[in-house]
Image (cartoon, rainbow, N blue to C red; front, side):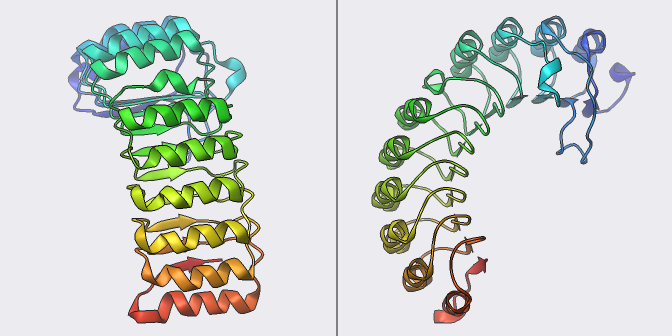
Length: 317
């Protein structure tokens, strides 16, 4: 059916048998977007997937250079049935320089050193702009020297060591978006990431649900005016009023338009400092869900941010 249709997007529950059949049809199809497996982003479906192994991935990899695919998504819901190893990922990586892919999503796999190394080697020769490796086991230092514009590393086991390696790679990369949510990152890595901001192209940085304290925030604040960041997510960390005292005064000289500080230990003193400096910043949105700010200062902050100098900043508690 595919070779004779104008279908450009396909979502499919996949196993090896289907992957082999699909690979045979890809070169003569008009598919540009291929989604294999189930994900919430696919119309909210929660699908039970069959087994996809290296056999199926290798066949798809062979077909990639001869296809029109630009977006390729592989997401298996149940990690315990995933049978894709570095061998399959390495074959996929080898096909990247000869393919038209600009976006590749490999989610919930156990990608090891060999797989990541091959992906990293292929990146400069490929057309990839976005590489999403959510829920995989990978090493940050393998992603050095590439042209990626979006790199999502959510829910991996990257700690300070891996994040520091990523920080070292930032100045030589084309990354504009970096997501390091839930990665056991502390102040040591935060300091290195902050120092790399001024020489990076990052505009979006997410450090949600890590172990960053006021120490890391102070270094971040010092480097914020020299960065290109427009969106910063620091919710679910260990930031107190002391950290906000350092961060808030730097906001007017920064490019930030979105700031997420919810689920931290921020109280009335932090709110007072934000009220003083936010109106003079480029901020359009400030998220302060589940903090220790009292009702009186919530009202005060809302008043300052929505009325002062006729500028309105959306604030959410």
